[in-house]
Image 1 (spheres, rainbow over the protein chains, first blue to last red):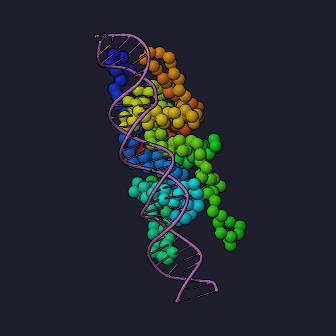
Image 2 (cartoon, each protein chain N blue to C red):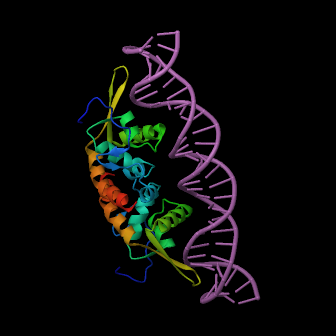
Image 3 (cartoon, protein in one colour):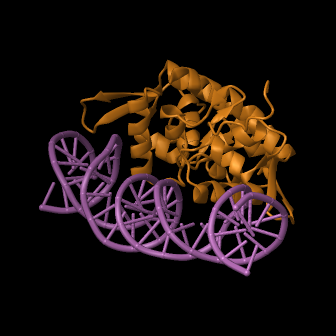
Length: 115
Length: 115
DNA sequence: CTGTTATACTGTGGAGTCCGAAGTGGTGGA
DNA sequence: TCCACCACTTCGGACTCCACAGTATAACAG
């Protein structure tokens, strides 16, 4: 504001922070059911695929599968496979996943109250 | 938990809260650039379309336009149009929008630190 | 020995959504 | 006259999401 003659620079800077290259995690969370999924997994110590499906019946299994794979790649969720028959796979939040979930909870709870 | 013999019901209930019908706001936020956009608008008293574009250069104008329309319908953002030439339109968060932004900030800040 | 069950996915095809680039309209300045 | 300005739309193509069906394996019932 010191020099009103120069136009504002067309940066993506907002009060010192830039949301433009908000890279990995936000893009991963900006998908359908992603935030709900983090919250659901975080509400338990570990969950099996079928349990997750039962908790989020509005999402298809292929979508859940994709989200979990994305979370694993983003380091939010750990996948543990037991070589048993029938197969057993358990999902749990990593430390980073818990960090995300903690910050997500207030938002989810507020939106719930509004609906 | 009173009866361990009955299998758990296949509801979408998680510790008393159900994330399945998390309808309006979360779906609105679960789109590309949506969370960033709320944060950007909330960082100012009011913003014009071109300014928003300058703050989020990675998103196209059509995407920004759609998000803003969705936010307006969801009651998160207010749109004020001035009948001037050249046209001027100002966007600002509503009270609900500010509620969302407050709960969004910790998440965005954390993801920024990780990148 | 056959058929059923259980689990955790993956494949498919169609509908829906998202994307960037280019265009629109009206006016004021060069 | 012609271009810049501003806030969007429109467009075609790419991507995403969905329901449904199918895969592999072995324990178990009859």
